[in-house]
Length: 319
Ligand code: NAP
Image (cartoon, rainbow, N blue to C red):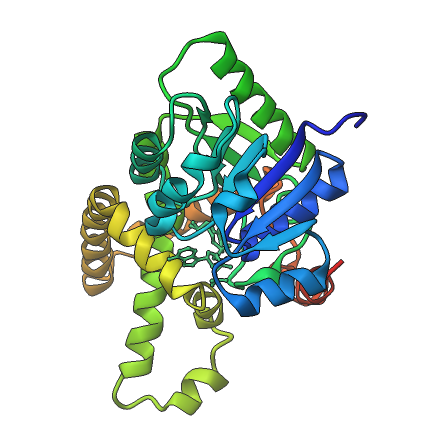
């Protein structure tokens, strides 16, 4: 890349995702200067020590001043407040985006908080880990992952150009970009991300509470499928509380459907309907193979766990 796409990027909230965006953008040469705002003194100290930002402050407005791109990377329910904090400092023509896992409520909060002179383009990288904080960030997080942008219903050329530049930005970070209506995003993610997290939180909670099975047995025999749920159930409690509270309708809709399907499965088990079970399990196996073919997961035995865990250790080291 010759010139950076954005002369200055401000990142508000520098946890796993904020730090990863900075590291990836730096590696791609997609930004010039990087300013970070983070509320926690401990996090600011770590960010300064990691050395990937040109400036670190507690004040979002200070970070956003003169920025060409402002990226909000705080929990979903804190997005409105972050947008209100940067609003007075935004330069005309700045692009404001976010990485929140829910788009309907965030799009509304940003539209209400931000001035007309900037370009608001909500977004969501479909990439992450169960880790939190700036030390967890790594430059490769977005490689071959999808980023969904949910642009506003504006057709003017300057806005379209802002969407195009943000698309180029994520592409430079290694992602595939798709544009989508925010309500559709929330329904799709309710199925592919929010419901699986709810199931994981629930099953780990159930196992922990189950009388007759000791905590020791739960840990010792966890390789039988449970372990994969525990990884998901280790995800950040604040982030996921916010996701369920702000994507209530879509989550309840898919949860209703899921509960019906679970009832049908339970009936099939009760009545010994082996063919029904076999058909479903064959279909789901095909879906898994499709995900691997799409490059979104590893085909290695044990989900490439041994390889991946050593990669994760290397990846999460500050660069
Ligand atoms: P994280 O590592 O926990 O970082 C969260 C950041 O937000 C930290 O800088 C934290 O500041 C700040 N923050 C927390 N509460 C805040 C508040 N009330 N006001 C202002 N700042 C606050 O979380 P993350 O995984 O990077 O998630 C950030 C966003 O990315 C969320 O909107 C999430 O939905 C989205 N996302 C996450 C993933 C994932 O897998 N983790 C994937 C895609 C998108 P402190 O330093 O003060 O704690």
